[in-house]
Image 1 (cartoon, helix red, strand yellow):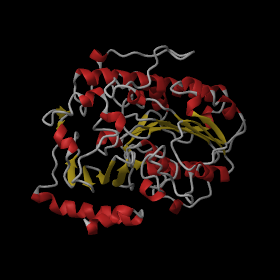
Image 2: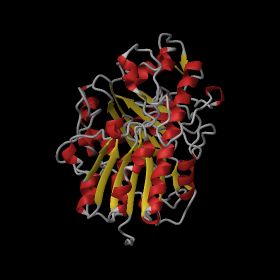
Image 3: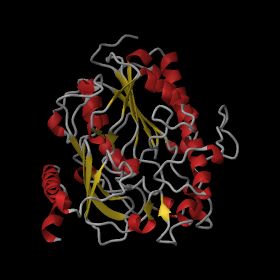
Image 4: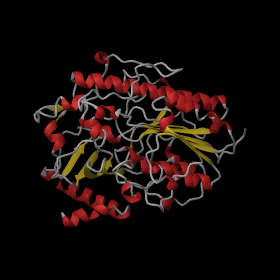
Length: 452
C-alpha cells in the first residue's frame, strides 16, 4: 500500500486517568517499555495540558478543538449528569470523514451525542473491559483495509474501578486489576514497598497499596499500546502512520484528577510522526488538548478553517526542543466532574507562573465519588490537620478566590503568592487576560466577575 505525504494515517491513543507515570517521563519504578520505545522513536512533550481534568469533558475538547464550556460538555455525559456537546459542533471524525478518511473508534466512548461523533467503525469498551491487548487485536481488520484511516483508540486503564460502590463504601478501590490474567496476557504486579510515591501524594500504607494497583493498570495499558503498534507494523502501515499518545486527565488521586494543579493537568503527550526528523527528543512548547484536533486536521490537510477551533496546530514545532515565536501561556477551564461535583476554575498557565481563579471559592472543594471512597483519602479526610502530600487536607478542601504560584521555585504549588501586595498588579493583569479568554471562548461563567 502506498500513501501520499499529505494523507497519513492517524492513530490517536487516549488513556483514562494516566498522569506523567512512564519511564520516559521519569518514573523509575513503573514498567512502560512500549510507551518508552514509542517515545524513543518520537517526540515527548513536557508541557502539554488538558484544559479540564475530568474524563468526558476533556475528551470533548480533544475531539473538537473547543473548550468544553464552549462545546456544551460541562462535565460527565453519562447517567444522571447528562452533559453533552451542542448539536452544531464540528467534531474530528466529521472533519476527517469529509476529507476522505475512514474513521474508527474502539474502547471507551464517553462523549455525547453520538450523531456529533459519527465514527464509521465502532467497537465498544464493554466488549473488552480492561483487556487492552484484545482491544488492539480487534482493530486489525480496520487497519488492514484501505488507507488513509483515523483510529481513535481509547483505553479504560488506569481508571479506578467503581465496583466499591456496590458494597461497603470503604472497600479497597482497585484499578480494574483481574484476579487472573486476561487470556494471552500476563499481569505485572508491583511491590508497594519499592515504589516511588509522587510528591503530591501522602506516603502512607494506603497510598502505597493503591499506587501499586495503579501501576499494574498502567502496565496493562502499556501492553495494549505495544500490541497496537505491532499490528501497525505487521500490516505494513506503521511507517506512514502518525501515532499520538495522551491521557484525558491526571491519575485518579486527590491533588490530581479533577484539579488543575500540575499533577491533574500536565500530562503525557508522545507523537511519532514519519514526517519529522527528530527521534527521542523533547519539545517544551506549551500545548493544550484544544490543539489536538487542529493539529490532526493540519497533518491530514483536512479542508477546514483554523478559525473553527480555539486551539491551534502545533505541527510546525514538533521538531523544536524550545520553539521560538510560539505561545507563552495557555488557558485551562474546569467546571464540573459529576453534576454534584461543581467547582469551576479558570486558569492561566504561563512559562513561570500559574494563576487560578476559583470561581466558587466559598464552597468546600468536592470530591469525585471514585476519589472520595479511596482508602488513602479515607485514611486522612477526617483529620483537617493531616497532610495530603505537601498541603494540608484543610487547604485542599478550602481554597481562596485566587491562587498564584511560582512554578520554578514552588513546583508543588504550595506557597500561594496571590495575597502578597507585590503581586497585585500581576493578579490584575492575569484577571484581565482570563476575562478576555472567557469572552473569546463564549464562557457562560464570564458573568461571575460582575455579579459576584
